[in-house]
Image 1 (tube, rainbow, N blue to C red):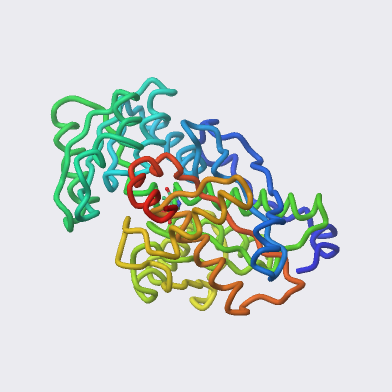
Image 2 (cartoon, helix red, strand yellow):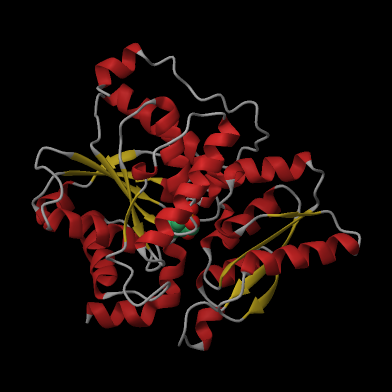
Length: 347
Ligand SMILES: *Cc1c(COP(=O)(O)O)cnc(C)c1O
């Protein structure tokens, strides 16, 4: 849809007031240009949506999800949240901070998902901040059904007299994804205000809620902005299936129309050896974005997303006149847990 048509159609809005919500997020987050990175790569015009600047405890994409998840937790009378993530989870860090802000306790399960890390990996970066926020945590080995583990722990806490609220990994359910349907609305509003229309949105995709919320939001608004998810973990078929399932649940929650499965776009060419293991293209994305734009990415998510954007530009995927929007989902806190590999790349 053109910006002109959108302006005339600007009454189409998603009504979020019917969902419980708490105010945690600096919003709208800015959309900025990346002129030096764009010039270096020689492709389309590159822009960046700064969701690393959402304001809660170094920011990131989980803040928008937590506005709705914590809203639901408070409505249910919870005094504690229980969630799970990998050891260097940004979701856990932001959930812990949100719990502090609302005077709730936070208990988390951390999965040792990334192999061959030294002992500092479980002390620095996000883990250090989890401790600072007074979170209690327990570790799990790699490969369990972590949501099932965390739900079992939640039940145990309930039986012990607590009032826990369970948040799935990454905050990725229909409630959390509302935060990104709201971000879709925000991007449309910013496009209308600035007159700048984007042809593509590129982002790192993991537990699926961010991409699902955006796709659901743009779909309801009738806004034609394809979202390319760069997988950080799973092969294309599995990631596409996960994002589609969350998108459908989010649309059902919002009362939106059905969506064609081919609207879910995933590229799995930048995962490297696996979750939390930076590939050479990940390290290059961290270095280029820092040195061209003064922007910090993280080695687990946003730099794999940026590596995808860089790779797509180099392969001629975009037209030279396109405006491409990269969603910066945050995560730079975990840079410190990867100092060894990043320094090796810089040397
Ligand atoms: C969680 C996370 C993502 C992925 O978002 P999902 O909703 O889990 O797909 C991307 N970037 C960062 C920095 C994250 O912490």
